[in-house]
Each structure stands twice: as C-alpha cells, then as structure tokens.
Image (cartoon, rainbow, N blue to C red; front, side, top):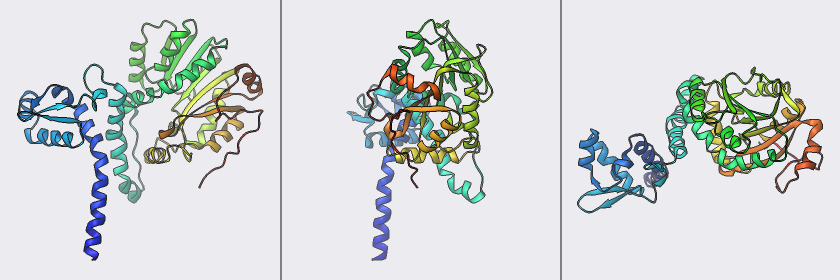
Length: 361
C-alpha cells in the first residue's frame, strides 16, 4: 500500500510538470526560429537538413509541440505551426514583448530559482548582469507601457509641463508615446546601461525633443535644475530597501514644487497576483544586487519620510501585482486632486479618509 501511495503521489507531481512544457517549447522555437521554419507544412527531415539542427532533437521538439498544440500534424508526415496558438511569436507580426518575456523566464528566472538549494546551502547569491540582460529586461518592462500610458497621459493633459525625466528609461518607449502628444515638451531618458541608451537613441531619432544620458539615478540631476514630471518605473527592485528613502530624497532636490513622480512597481503582499509576485520576489532576493519588492505600507512610509504624498494607487496588471501611483510634494497634493478629479474606486487620495494599510504576515 505504501508503494502504491508513493507511486500515485509521484504521478500527481509528474502531471503538474505539463504546465512547464508550453513555455519551454515556445522558448526553444522562438530562439531558433523553428516556428517560422514550420510556417508551412514540412517534414522534420527537411527542416533538419536546412538548419543543420540534429534530427532527433528536432523531432523530439516537434512531438512536444504537437502535444501542447503549438504544432499541427499534417498529411505525409509533415507538421505546421499553429497559426492560432503561435501568432504572437511567428513571422513579421510576432510580438517582441512575448518573445522577451519567454526569454526572461527561461534564461533569468528559471535558472535562478533552480539554484535556490545551492544559494541556501552555501549562503551565496547570484549577481544580475546588467550589460548581458539589460536589453531583454528593457523589453519586458516596455510591456507595461500599454497598461499605464493612458493613465499618465490623462494626468498630464491639463498641466503645464515643460520637461519630463524618465529614470531607468530602457528603450525610451514611454517618452516616445508622450512625445507624440507633447512635441514641445523637453524629455530626457536616463539609464545605467549604455547599450540600452544606444538603442533608445536610435529608436527615438525622429523625436528632436527627446535626449538620453547614461547615468546613475541616485546621483544624476537634470541640467535645467528641476523636473516637472519624473517617471520612476520598475526601479525599486534595483534599490536596496535601506537606500530607497535616499533615492526619493534625491528626487526631492530637483522635483518641481508642484511636480509629479509617476511610479510603476510590482508590490509584495497584495491581494492580487500573489503567486507571481512571490516568485518574482524570490528571483530578486536570490541576487546580491537585486532586492525584495516593497509592500504598500513600506511605500507609504518612505513617501511620507521624504515629504511626498502618495495617491492614486491602482493595480494595472493584477496577475503580476504591478501597481501604479503618483508622488507629489506634500503641500500640493490637495490642489492637484481638486484640479484633476478621479473616478477610480481604488485610489488613495491624501486629504480624504484613507483605507488602512496593513502588512500581512
């Protein structure tokens, strides 16, 4: 009986492994452009001959593809990529975001999580290589633009904005989207990764009001002396918890008196996306130069210590526990709320009765 129970328990865990296969299959197919090779029905042998990939490995990949429905079996021992299930990773219309997300999961998250026993036994940590992985992280961060940009544009629509600074700008996607509607606003993107900045400059060449600088956001200051709007998107996990207050204090030295700071960050210990945010947090803390996600209470506390008011806290990607909110110098937030108004039920507006923020255990 004990052997039977043991076998059944192992069988249950084996079945759980199936959910990993679609991501693995998509990663291999995306990295090797295999979905494109099978865009039309072809034999495994013909693709192996054209690409030089080993026949047995390719055949095994195709069989997994059929099982997870990424591939369709066609007559005469041929196979074709499923147009319905793989549209986002095939051909000219493929989504760079989907490819980048799969790549980040398989090349960054999974290897780190698999080394957890090693890190715990040896009391060691990985080290995030910004030069090597900065590009793919910039791509996945850009995915959030589509969910947050409308909110940012709405806030800026009735304000007299002279300049915008994007800290940790990645490839500059936020700035380009804002520049389309605000061509006379001077915009500056700042990022530590010079390769990311080079690509941002190339992709923004048609925007004369956007410039980019390589710099450390903890010390960088704008030449103008102040900034009307500061974008602080996906930054907190790069900053040690003990240094986050220092960063906000630094921003306070050049944020305009009635300025705004737009913040996007994953948050821990929330009612949304607990599984994903917990795994995301595990990835961060396994590195010596990445850090634990903040929770709501911690964000509110450091904001108050640095004389900022935090308002309009809102989840933009619930399954990932990504939130947006605004910071503004404390004395200006009440007037700001009167000017802009709100129709969001989840907002936290200083000056009004606020919901109690509690830290879960």
